[in-house]
Length: 387
Image 1 (cartoon, rainbow, N blue to C red):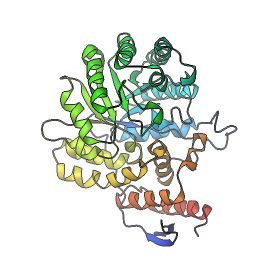
Image 2 (image 1 turned 30 degrees about the horizontal axis):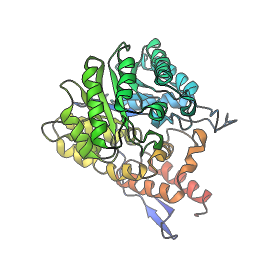
Image 3 (image 1 turned 180 degrees about the vertical axis):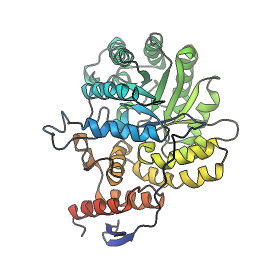
């Protein structure tokens, strides 16, 4: 069967026929000339679920299997980040287990690498009174990661956004943490479209003010900063940051709207990648990045550019619910045997959204197992009254 009934925005139903071709897998782990982190999701375990909103059960076997999938395609993994539903279904206790297991699993795979998100999510923003509260929370998470042999991505903090009053407050907290880390750290600039509680991050309402604060923090801690991930869904802002970074400090695009052009670069500068969408389009991104490393920009563009409309749909407003689209594609492609998420997050999007993702994934050659994808999309559509 190569067709499925899908709902349309006008309330009608169409019979949709597949046109895409699955992307072939590389014979060996490819090499890239860009650092490419895929931010990876976690797989819930509905068979053991007792309290999905407060204590979601995780299928650790399937979660680790997905990391092997990413490593086999040449990616580094950004572990326990917002794609793994940090603060939206996965709490610090769950994140600790995820970090422990992923770091241990990486040791079993030659060349496997990952960095882990350290934040302050075990500290309630409402209970945060001082900058020292934030510092202690960051210290707890960074020390846990380092104790288990991991490297740190310093995630944006809701608690810090709540208590900081100026850029100087951000500089004080980041300076304190960076002064203590064993290894270089990747900073994380996450826009409030991903998390509304991060509005005004870096101590200013304007991009220009925030940019000056970020650059000052990097300059003051240059020996401890590997790079910075910027997720503002605005390529002009990323390019402005990129051109002003000190030599040796990397720019990692987190722009799930414009990543293709930012990774390719302008002939003078380019961005590396730390992207949630790479979870969903890993085979295509891997093929494109391998082509770029070989100087074949035509293949890079032809493979990766069709994934951009798909990514823009997945990350459309309200952007923080993008995780649902990522896990939806993992289910369609057979990486998990159900479409449920911690905290029931699959309910954050409607059937029309998922139908649009299905169409765009087909056009971008992202449906790896067409027959399985058809069966599963049909069952989801039927569940929503589309038969």
